[in-house]
View 1 (cartoon, rainbow, N blue to C red):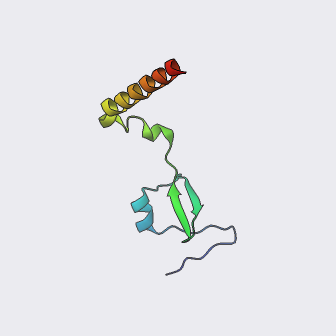
View 2: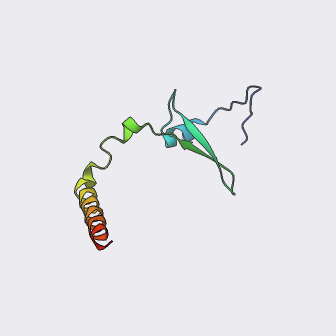
View 3: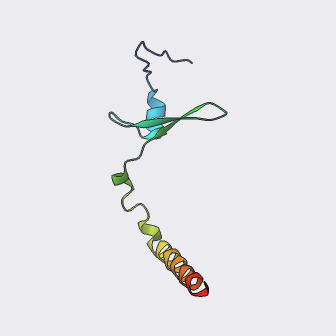
Length: 78
């Protein structure tokens, strides 16, 4: 099933796609060109990402600590 582009270049995104992508009135999307076609990618506001890594906080802190230790060792070796 095709969709018609209006004179102003707009199209209606089918309700099933909007639901799947979590799009509502005012949502922003990007169009990404690939070899297979065009992807519609929702733009996630930074505010929505706050706390997203809460379950991995310990792991992230350990990784940061490791990186800092490696950099310290590298600085001493130079």
